[in-house]
Image (cartoon, rainbow, N blue to C red):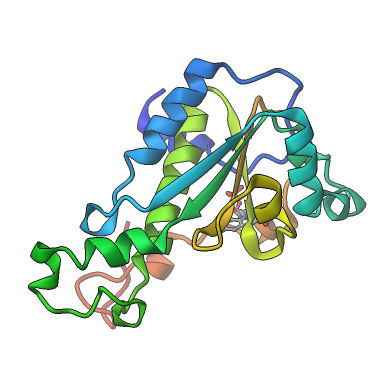
Length: 206
Ligand SMILES: Cc1cc2nc3c(=O)[nH]c(=O)nc-3n(C[C@H](O)[C@H](O)[C@H](O)COP(=O)(O)O)c2cc1C
């Protein structure tokens, strides 16, 4: 599949068939996840790949699947044969920026307060995007459940306290799904949000 097609096809799919995901596909998706860029090459992205049925059920419950069902969605979390729990290890960044080549610049980034932009979140997002595109490239579909309401997920998966959970990418073969009402807002045309050369100049023509 060419890149334009991957970009065009990607959307959050909130239902999957009961077909499983081939291990080779999952391996390629996870290779894409770890090839995402990271600040200082800190590589603080961490992942828990969940395929075990009972664990997926517990994850779905923690992620509030019942509420989705009550709102007319399919049980898309438990139905997804693969959950990729995307996490970030802030400590990897603070340690990396304590190393001589980084510490020399004395930017204070060996402490959390020294980060103008906490890149551990940015890099996790880059991995998330890589996962979503890689899934489409495999002929699969993916969704994403943000970590704002993940209940006792940390306990279920034994994720240590120092690791932050960003969210869960659900992966599977696409089923018929109900699209999010949010999509009615429509995509921003580039001319609305892309400035050309200067913030106050006429918008980018593309
Ligand atoms: C950081 C982030 C968090 C999201 N959290 C959720 C979520 O908790 N539940 C959900 O159903 N969709 C979630 N979404 C999906 C968005 O609703 C979706 O990406 C957006 O409506 C655009 O639709 P599309 O991705 O299908 O093009 C999230 C997306 C992002 C990027």
